[in-house]
Length: 146
Ligand SMILES: [Zn+2]
Ligand SMILES: [Zn+2]
Image 1: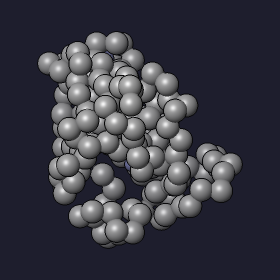
Image 2: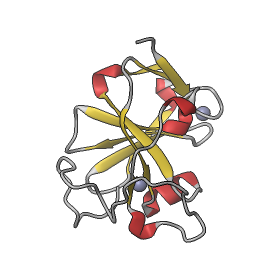
Image 3: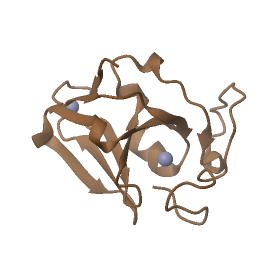
Image 4: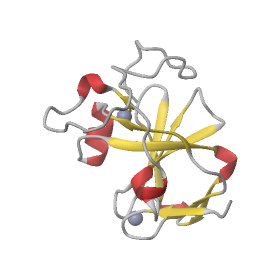
């Protein structure tokens, strides 16, 4: 497929994906709420080898956002750019809305429904999970949110 492109709010960081993202879903965990300032974030996954920073690598800040994961963001504008779970080194999750064409990747489920903001009622029939989805690699349902 042709590369999908995305980047941060200020445009300093640009990335490309060389395969179609999968496992697209909403996350309603508190960390996503605090990271985004919104009620939830929508993520999708690609193999790490298919994720390439095209510009701005030097201004990407990487921080541990939990005991088992890291998030990156643009140091200039603060846009969140990725999550990497330490147990899943082969893949990276990216916020769908940072894609140039976010309509192209459609969420298929909700996780961390237990901390969904009450006034944010997604009007869909997607499956909901109180915490992680079952069988999420390396993460059982007793772990704190990323
Ligand atoms: Zn930026
Ligand atoms: Zn989350």
